[in-house]
Length: 274
Image 1 (cartoon, helix red, strand yellow):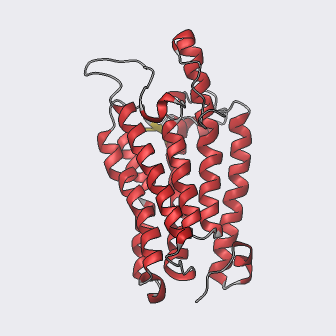
Image 2 (cartoon, rainbow, N blue to C red; image 1 turned 180 degrees about the horizontal axis):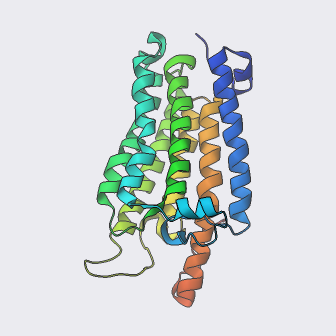
């Protein structure tokens, strides 16, 4: 078994071609999503969950069906763990016994154990998700879980070399920033308090979207650890397209709400640059 370069996925077996076309479809879809988000459209969840902008009667009906935020996170993120379990069970022995494959897959599983169970259980007072948003997130997690986990347990042989170690180290740094930022956001308000506050500490001293930056860094490291294979690059790219514009929207929202109180030197997503 050999490591296939990203641009050769479309010449492999039927399943490899399927993975290639799923990656292509996801990349194209998220380019369009990034363009829409950059033009002022906001993903309708969290502070942006208004629902009134949706014109279609069917979509209005679906959007009126709100799902508890904790339940939504569990339902939409957990398909990745199902994909990991099934892929491991039906995986190739060469992949499932490879230290490199096991290490990279473990990174994926650790993130989604946190996102599916630990993060929701620690949430405080989050606004509900609209049903369409939860369903779209669930669909992405199912497809992404399939292409990542199936690749790592059947079609990619990841060597434990310097690139893999660099990728895992980058992933660990991103995970730390992400979890630290989530903790700071979760503990902003004291018991009984309401409303929004300015986050401080950690990467929030440099950027408004510290949690988003951490997650983008995670999946960039993951893509490096996978040796630049198409599924890993797709995940990193889609993550940046989805939450990058949201970080910029958050930054502008903070500026509009807090005005002169908000730190002038703080950037939106990339320290000192953006």
